[in-house]
Each structure stands twice: as structure tokens, then as C-alpha cells.
Image (cartoon, rainbow, N blue to C red):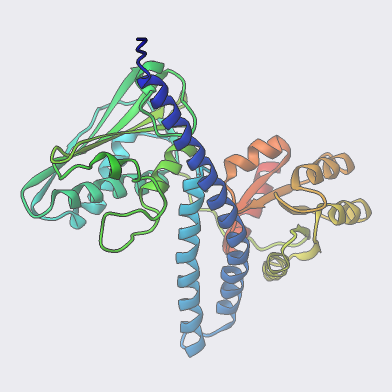
Length: 393
């Protein structure tokens, strides 16, 4: 008789299946969110243009505000879908993890039941991590509130810890991210509760979109947490057992840069000049042209990269700025940008996309002067134009 321990092989096969499932769901969620953001750009932008035309005491003004609020809620849902796909809209900056945890937990203290004690054990002088503060807020709120609810009606506690760890590949084998981070120094957030814990079946499904153990669904929940962590090149692990509580640990690679001071808010822009809008969606082109005209610009439009290159080659002396979509048929954003820079090496180009800025910079490199996230408002577009002009001044 020959006996062979295949435990490692089974774990590897299970990890591969989980990775393939997450990749497939991530691609689906990302594609839907990207297309939906294009449509929301028209809804939110046109609602803003309409609101500017109405007096504040008009009955129609309230209806437009309600429309805008509903569209913004839809935009937040698409943001969660992009986060799950690992392609969310991240405003990356070096931050102090412990300070952020203090600020975020103070906001959600009122949402924690009185029978649950929230404890903080935070390391001082952690090296900064590169992340999006709003996405970190979503992670901590999700984990802490879920942990508090798991305690039930009895007395219990939720502890949030931060610490610095130097870890190797062996310590990362329990990861649930699609990519395996390298060894090195990580700033770690731990959220541990004394609640009911989870059995193996539940644990294997907690990162599935819309999976919930509650009576009603709460959205993408932990699946968006996983996507956010993955999008920040991080790692999440889960240790749980029925009746023994749950411990989530999130690892973020530390940054070599310092913490940046808060930047002052940008002003609205009013100006003159000609802007070429390049997008394959009619609703986006129409809204962007109207927004630019409201800001004082002359607007031209092209439905794809090929049209944009033709128009720019004929009128590049008169065109001051190009607003360029990343993903288009016929000729995509990257190829279009190359042709524009061949025609005029000092061209000012602002990329726009439903995906996040990091992906745009990876695709376009230093060729772009700025980035605007879909969906955007008239004011947001104006601020991006102002910032790009300052950058190229």
C-alpha cells in the first residue's frame, strides 16, 4: 500500500478555484460598473446643469435635487462594484493608519450597540501607507459594524488594533487576495470580536457579492472590502470558529514617503478657450460640451479616437485642451493620446474614465495632464481643468 498526504495539493486547488471565481466576478462587476458610470455621467451632469437654471424655491428644483441624490446613490453602488473588481476610484496618498482609525471609529461609535465595547489598541509612529482614506473608511466601518452585530444581545467586545509587521511568503499563504503580495514590512489593521464566529461554509462565502447572513442584503459588503484591499496591493486574512469570534487582519505595504498635508480646496474655473471632448457615449459628449460651455469654453466633440485625431490635426493650434476617454471602439485612448502628442508634443490632455486614476496613469503614463473620474459634475470638471492648467503653467 502506498499512502500520500495530499492536503497541500487540495489547499492549492481550492485556492486556485477561489482565485478564478474572484477574477471572473471581478471582471463582470468592473465591466458593468464602467458602463453604468458612463450613463450616470449624463444623469448627474445634466441634473446639475438643470439645477443651475432653476430658482431655489421652484418645485422643479426639489425634483432635480431628488434626482441627483438618487443618481449619487447609484454612483456609490458602482463604486462598490469597482472596488470589488479591484478597479475602484482611489485617491491615493500617504497616511498614518492609526490616526485614520481614530477618526473613522469616532464616526461610527454611535452605530455600535451599547452592549458592545469598542477597544482601540493603536501603534504610535507607524510608517505611512499609500491608500485612499474614503476607501479605508468603508473597510473599517464594514468590519467593525459587522463585528458588533455578531456579538448579539449579550455583552461583548470589538477590538481594533494597528501594528507593524515584517512578514515573509510563508505568513501570506492564508490570503484571500487575487495577487500574492511580496514579503516585507506591512502596516496591519486587526478587527477582532467576541461574537458568534462562522462555520467553514459561511467563511468560504463571505466575500461573494451580495452574500449575507442577515435577514436582508446590505449591498456588496465584504466583497467590496476584498476588492479595496486588492486594489491597494494589500492582503486580507480571516480566522474564525463557531462560538469563538472572528478576527480579520488587513495588511497594507508601507510607503517610503511622508504623510502629505491636506491640500486647500480648488476653486471653480471660468475661462476661455477651446476644448475637444472625445468619448464614444453620446450622453457623455453632450453633457461635457454643455458643462464646458457653462464654464465659458468653446467645445468640440469626437465620437472615437480616429475622429479626434482628424479634428486635432486640422485644428490643433486652436484647441487648448483635450478631454479624452480611456476606453473607446475604433481607436482607444492610449493610441489616440500617442497620435495627439505626435501632432503637438505639448498637448494638454485630461483623461476621463469610470475606472480609477491609478489605472489611467498606468495606461497613459506622463502623457496626461490630469484625470477626471466618471460620473462628474460641472464643478468637478472645472476644478480638474484648473488643476491641469496650474500643472502645465
